[in-house]
Length: 495
Image 1 (tube, one colour):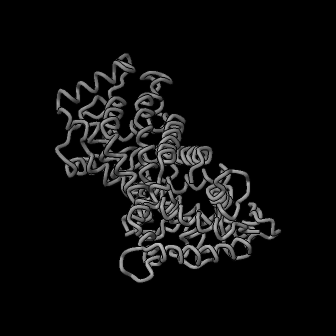
Image 2 (spheres, rainbow, N blue to C red):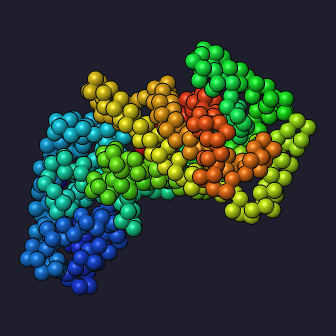
């Protein structure tokens, strides 16, 4: 039987609940009193203000702003009758308990698509004594106030559960400490692994951007209508650049600045991904559905941009130090920590703290569209692929696994596209950061000056110097980053 308690036992239980909610002294409850009472008993509704107001109005039958015991008892009796009927409809074998298979079958029969992860969490939250089944008292106590929120069916149960589970004590979208920390850890690991793997290509890109001069032989050949000759000369330029870097310090020179890159990218990636996930949840709340997977394209774009801009502001001084250090490396010169310290002193002595933030506006201008296009494209492609596979296999999207190759391919496409769009801004920003160094002795008095001098010395193609190694770097870097990130999220139990 779903409920075998006697009338006296029922009366005593409801009276105890009434008193536990705080009505023992006043014999009535107002809205604030009900809210405090729910917090006192640690009910799932304790922070769901908007839902709680609707429920309060449902219990307050005469609408006088106060809940009397008679109103509360009438509400409880009606609610428990409906919950009992729903419980019995799910309890297929009529043993007075609901197991996970029965709950899953009931959701499917009702046409409600629910992921295995969400089903498992809902079951675990309702099964308070953790015996592997849901008893009627557990069902009743967890869903008692459902009737004040919606009708009694499994659609309403899932909606009620989702709404109560996504709020924190401040009434904001629920991201508990473990998940918040998890996103930052996953992002940091992803960034460190990917940047280390592609450090030589990044070093080559910075070298080509910083080394200015007249139009290259490759450009001249292209203008003369000899594309094959131009391609050959471009390849030779890359080979010559690698040789020059090797002469400056061997393999160590190719990884120069990687230590700073790892130190920089740990907080950068962590803040970027963490802020992105937080922004998605915030925009989902603003849109009124609390589901980050249903964000409008505009919200998706803004979430990505917010993540990139926040991260850029935090790590920009380290970025500047890395670029300038790479541009001060010469054969027989300072290396490692000595070079880092000398470079930092030089920047500070000449321009103070401002010197570490040269080109920041360009960095922010480039970072917003890069992060927005990158993350939004990745999420769009991922959702599209998951939806297609879910339809083919007849399951929920959350239950469709993406292998590392697929995740990496999606990341490479999104990263390559976004990097190409903003590359001219990155060239100008890097030159402003590297100005006055051994490799890039030219100095600038502003954004317009660096753009003008680039056009004068190298033409419009100067805005794309170093694009080839950058694209060669982006595919593996982004792929590795997203593969590690997605797997880290899965290991940490994050969505």
